[in-house]
Image (cartoon, rainbow, N blue to C red):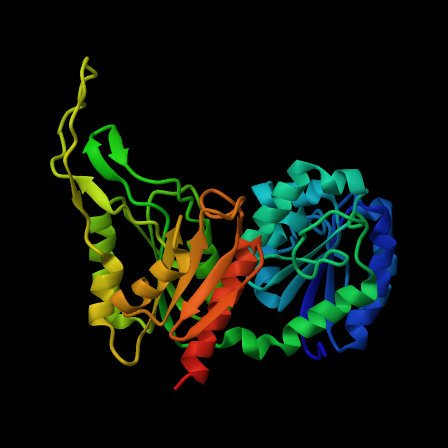
Length: 403
């Protein structure tokens, strides 16, 4: 049930806008309070008078309600709501949301929203299937928005028959289910979680480095999932182009030694460490202070091993702390993961394999196996946002059910 929940319903310029009436009726029937925010294009398909009659609230569309300077505060709406639902949501609005184009009241409200956001796409199949639309939906999903599309749960993960908007009853049901399960989504309330993400760069000279192809997407997805479940999150990240929620304490580093220093400082005051970073195993023995010039002949580069962050934290780990490590392997995957489980003193290992095409580095997807002491769980290929949920589910299981 949605008793007492405050819902901002965003309506955009789609032929499916008339279905918003059924959504409003469903939300109110379950006890919710609904405030409609509609785009100018949306008003071409359904009148504000109809919507206001259903919600018993004035419909918000423009920044200023009168010529006397009275204005609608998108910030206040973001603080008022328990959830924002945008249904129907056109390809144009999805693109604006994904790229922060705040040119109407609905988008500014979305960008100010503190509560969970649910998006019900509505467009023809060709528009929905277009790579730009799919990329925008992935962006929105990866930063924590819930995509409600037919036969796809909260994530658009296929294209068959998914251009049309989900049915109003199903949309209302998914919001209701979300809040009914809200308690289970906050299992990490009061817990302090440290996460490492991305690559490290080990300098050769001022313009060259040893690194890897890690994008940081997996670590960032885990950080967002832990935040959604109530944790106080510290994210230590190597050089990546990703952004994270402002409620995540982010520490940007470049080298392994910098990540080690930040982790060693942070770890004693945390309950959980999740080490998703792809830390370089080697660094140059010497770093040139000037660019090394290209000359004929071979250059010999002497390498030395970097600090083993996981092993170092494993030695410091107390009985009240949990340590999750990652293993990226190309061969003997399980054997290597089991060895790492013991050598790092980890609670479990998240195993990635380079043999799984379309996963790991740079990809939006992942396919993992979780290796614990005497246990093994294999998961199908999923988005990294969905994989993060599996990893945090396993963490919660270890924290609260394994004594």
